[in-house]
Image 1: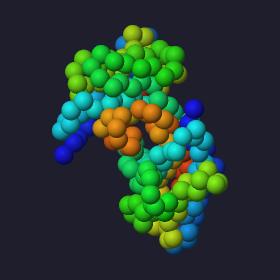
Image 2: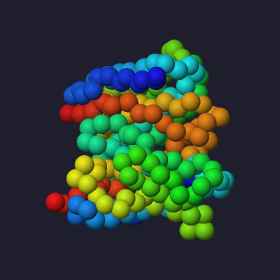
Image 3: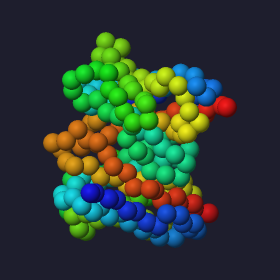
Image 4: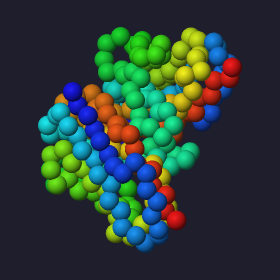
Length: 111
Length: 114
């Protein structure tokens, strides 16, 4: 069965600093991978996805992620954090009709 | 464009009372539909999904049930709520098995069982 592991349930960065949120996946087939963001008391919004093709995927709000098959990773990055990036971030892998989510990483941005 | 609505947004229920959460999708036909539960520190747990009317797959044994009476309507129910049923419930849809599996989420329903 497919699964994802997000290292670090809480990450804190300073405004303007690099954001790096880690995600490793386990999949028996070529995976489709996703990053979602959730603001308090709201649903999830898609940041970006990898299906096939280019391994560096650009998403909304300046985020990007790189699919590294050799490392089974799909880490999310943003060069410069903004206060509005404070939210919870979820990595997910497709499993047939379903998406399997990680446990999430809560990002805090300090002024 | 497609939209997804779920209600109620917030509810507080006593232990042992029934539950009904509703979710409706507009602007698409024959979507896959999903119920997830989010509990603090536990990420998103898939509860049920449906690929068509009357077709429900249950992911975890629990006190809840789901139904899909119409193509774009998905209902989460319980006959008797437990304290452990508290959480944030999210409905979602996707375009179907031929797609990448991207999910589109509703705004969520926060359930507190007292």
